[in-house]
Image (cartoon, rainbow, N blue to C red; front, side, top):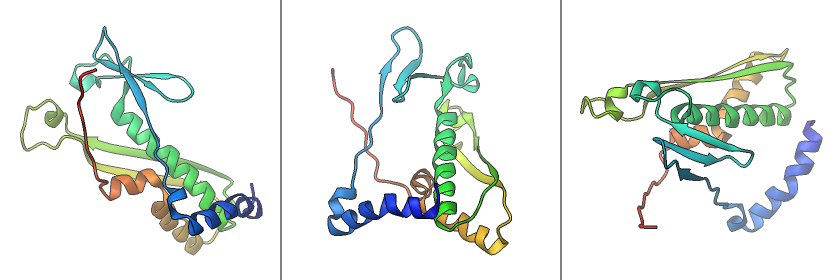
Length: 169
C-alpha cells in the first residue's frame, strides 16, 4: 500500500470522526473460558483458541501461553503495524524490519514472596531494526509518531482507568 491508497482509505474515516466524535469510540472485547482441569484460561483470539497458563517461573509447565508474553506480543504487533502505517504516510521505504519487545518481571511479586517486589513488568523495552535508505531525521520522526499512535504502547505508557468485577454465574 502506498501513501495515496492509505490516505484514500483513511480520509472518510477521519472526516466521519471529526464530524461525529462518538463514532470513533469503539469497545474492543476479549473473552476466555476457565479451564476446568488445569490452571489455565482458553482465550478466543478470533482465529483460534489460545490456552494461557502459568509461566514456568510460577510453577507452570511451559506448555501453555504466558499472558506476559502475550502482552509483549500484542505490543510488537501493534507497534509493527503502526510503524508500517506511519512509514507509509511519511513515504519512508522500509525494505525490511524487525520489532522486538522485552520486559523484566520479578516473580516474587506475583507469588507473594516479597511485598516490595512489584506485580507486573518493572520495565519494557521496545526496539525496531529497519533496513532503509531514509535519513536519520525521518527515522526519528517515524519513531516519535509510532510511539504516539501505537494503541498498546500508549495504553502501557498512560495508565487507563481500570475496573474489575466478579459476579456469580
